[in-house]
Length: 580
Image (cartoon, rainbow, N blue to C red; front, top):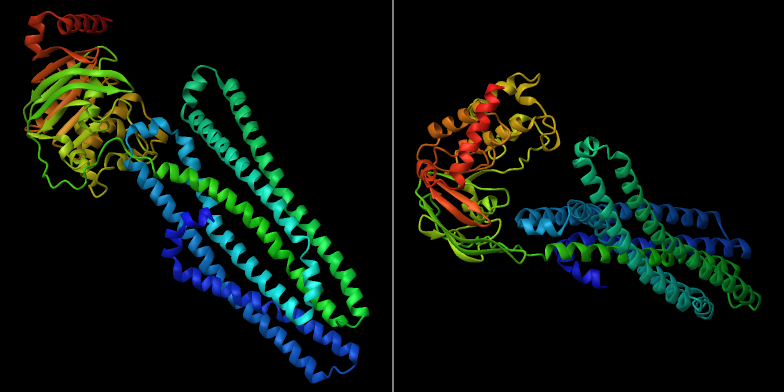
């Protein structure tokens, strides 16, 4: 009942379909009573010798009519009930996917991809089973049992009916105990399935690394252990599952024993006729389905309850970044100011005392050792996380005051780890705007210096890049990702170490194109190779989460600090590489 209460929002939404389905089920249950009754009447007519041909024809006609009516009604309830349960699956999948897109990166650090996939597949299937087959079992079993027992009680023998009911309380106790065990074991098996999903997803994603380190046997062994664990959990659940039917059949057997023994006695003392006994036993046979259905229902509800609890837990997760969708503030590019006193991530101060400003249309270069906080600065601007103390303002307004969707629509972002989709190069480039023309796509790839690479491929722009761009080189992936950002002509372009896999010549081409193409628009470039930022209007040097130096290229060289030493070192290395 707890799960039905949780799903009340959907039952109200599909009220009409459920009413039609339940009404059809009730009518089917009532019509099911007709054949056994007619069989009993015919047997008594044969026994008494007063069965006429016309009466037999009428009885056969009634049987055919009831069969056709039940066929039609069963079609009606199946279409409405199972159609509604399929809509529940569609709604829950959409809710989950929509929820996933709104969550901040911390959510994906808490939940692994395999877990989320298991929730969106197995768990939703278990819930839809409850809304479809579960509701059918509940209604059909309840109505069939009620009308059948009532008919047996009133039209045949109330004493024999009460005697047959004696084993049922014991059956209820047994199924209740089994149901609790199924709930716990199914929850464990679903968690184990999530772990299996994670194992497969991570193994397939990292297959190149696995092969490079010759770690295939170890990965297979790891998968075997996880697979065996999942199998054991599922086997445990199945063992409880298969106990349901035998337990029910044992108690049903006792009911048959009572009905045959006491029914025979009642016939011998003329309390009921032979036809009545046959009808009674047929009705008792009709009770087998409700009793089995109740066990099946108990099983489905326990599974659905466990799965819906897992789905609810996900949907109740709140993003730690407020999207501020009710803001009426109009966004526009302008002066960008960082005034961060402190940014704390996982109880560690990641950034502190960050203060600088950048005029609209200027270029900012961010450099520094690995782990110095360069990417954290960018993620705060993108509002993947929010500043702990202080603020970032754009056009004299705190970026938190803008709608999150408006802020991100202003920014083109090329991350360190380029994510390309398993689609064509064309579709990847125009991902942000599918309506762009092929010429615009080609032009964007020219700006990023990857056009010649693409047209040399057999399928050119129709080349399928594979999952995460597996068929492309690192430099090609970076340049296609840059094309994807450039094609939207964003007011603010962020390149987060996005030129690391290209050679110096290609880097110069891209940077020169950016200066021409993006005149009047803001650019932010992080890099380990300082040649990528020498033309920036402002360069900040990060170290241990704070600003070590800031100024333009010439000012930083004059300071003779980290920037100057690193720049001269890289220039020497580049000269030596050229001589080789």
